[in-house]
Length: 198
Image 1 (cartoon, rainbow, N blue to C red):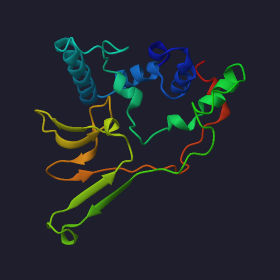
Image 2 (cartoon, helix red, strand yellow; image 1 turned 120 degrees about the vertical axis):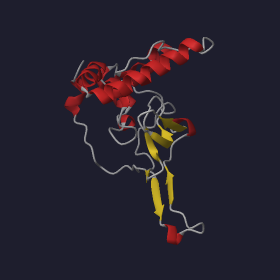
Image 3 (cartoon, rainbow, N blue to C red; image 1 turned 135 degrees about the horizontal axis):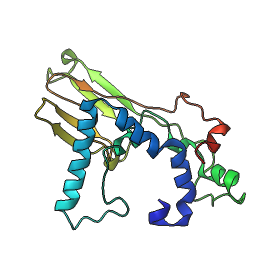
Image 4 (cartoon, one colour; image 1 turned 90 degrees about the vertical axis):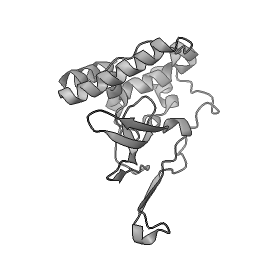
């Protein structure tokens, strides 16, 4: 973000580096089974082909996608919560001790949030069909609708996280799937994490 938006985003980038490691992503790709490598290769080839055939699209930073990039953010909204680390506290720890202005980041407990999903049996619906409902509590562009098919039998419709090629919530001709998230205490970040990789 600092490369695109300037020095004010430096500590946002530091926070991201605490969660995501490109060297680890490259190693995960190299160690992946052949079927997963093919999917990642197809993802990168598709993105690069799109950029090649749409010269009017000018990315602000990334001009070429690599097949290991999906491993940087493969957990969608299930894994570590990047925003649980305060940018203000990072700046105090590493910087000059002055926090960012309060209107840039609030440093108090956020309002509880989460998502919910419901499965309704055919006997309970007016149409007589099974219904799968989800409210992921995300912005529209965080979960765009996609229809993914392949010559190997993949046929899924639903929502994908931006930058990813797999469907997190969706359905096919056989079943539907979803997941929910909340602020349940399922992960702890220890102060020692702040010195890793720096």
